[in-house]
Length: 523
Image (cartoon, rainbow, N blue to C red):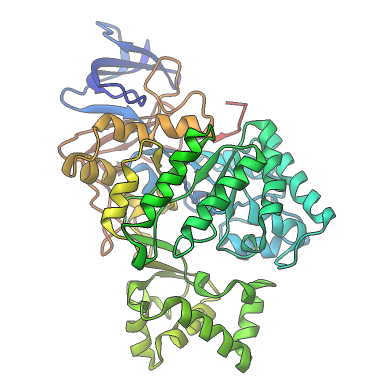
């Protein structure tokens, strides 16, 4: 007796091959047959006539490790068809740590949990304990390794500290991590030079890991940042993933993406394994304090507050913030924050908040991050649609949300990418804009991501694969979440299965938590 048969589906297998009409059978969480199954019996038989069946979407760039302990149902992930996530991106992972620096890690990650774990193995065990709704694969964050080795110091590491970071990276890979990431705009990762990065990152090469980077600059110096990223990966001997590739410098819109894509194409012609991921929106999202200059973060956020309390140092920080932001504060919105007292600020731009507070925008910005003790996030409208489309069409660009797992009643106005990234690619860029075929859209969200991560038995509708699957109506699928109402399920998704277990039906989470914590080379 089979567990599940989905009959008459238009199966897109994740490889980019044309869809084909087939039945799919599942037993004990795995796909056991794809073809004409006939009169076989099953606990559940579904007629999928007219619907497409695809592998569950793999989010190659997620931050759900920072929220999954508090939100294991991962509604914002499941209800858009995501079944597997790679977490620990932008240099920010929840492990490893040590007793000396765990409080700094708490501030750096802004995550949930008691932080009782110390090793990556401990954290993966914790994920298994909570039974998340999605499968989770962990990356090591370079920033996290640096905190464990030397706290928030801006100094160049000595040999002992370098070796400590490298040893932690090696241990993390042996624990089951899939690679290493950097966040070169976030202190303390931003304090690292190319030599440090190459030395630490090379530790993952013998384990088949890859390097994903939030580059040092995505604005006026983006070309230099792409060069640094490629050079670092080549020196380290690892494949490179450029995270959420975009251009945020308005004077260079429609120009620098063509330059950076050409650089990547050249690197690939020369034999270097370089790929990208991208989210399909014109706005970024991150912590509001990212607009504070790096030097002010040495010692952590408590040091930032002390520097802002000093008149002369505050004036210096303000000059540098104003030089960076210019007259663009209108493009920055508070998306979420921690306190009830300031909840009125969520969804409003910095100038709107400043006007109500009777302050000029930069002073309002300082007040917000201090009042909220850095637990405040922004949405920043920084890209143009032409660049988004140009990058997305490249065959080496896959889809990643750069989002978090959230409940449907999450406070504030978080970026809609948390809830709608993958259906948006299908509905807007495939169906409406016709930038690529549906098969290519699915490849960018499944098989290609599985190949990059090294997931050996996910990402495809094929015999022997785990039954992570999404059943959807191509004509009705839509990214209903938007910037005004992000906390909404996506329409057109009929069913989502994780390891063969029905986890969502018609936009409603079933309550199932069938996901597993994945360990590289132990899948």
